[in-house]
Image (cartoon, rainbow, N blue to C red; front, side, top):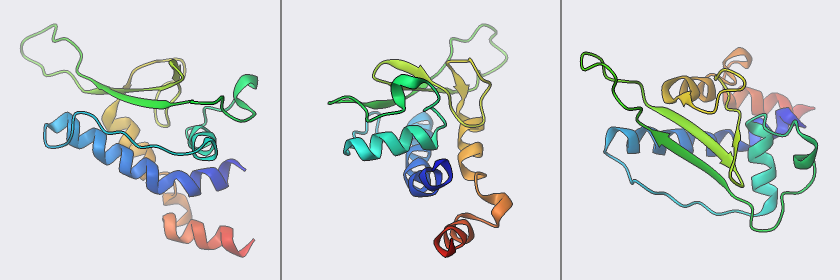
Length: 136
């Protein structure tokens, strides 16, 4: 279920957003490689709400990958620092991200991180949401 996928992948998404933010600030690695099986890729896509199209409703193809990139847009005016943006790709195809406008390929990093962190705030936090799901 989508809720179970969000719960299962929440710690990983927190780790990913933390690493993206550290890289953007210059205090983290510029490249991080995490590997997993097709079951992890499928759940990660479901947790991102990126499983709406029919070709992704089954198992991911062999050697599938999910890539998160941080971009610093080119400055157009010298008085303002542009916000960092993130994009997610599944096998090279841009994916929607929580907290971001539908249809846009690039999403403000801050909006994505806040959306991931706030995912279970209505249920009283991640631990409470997990406990409630376990009782079902």
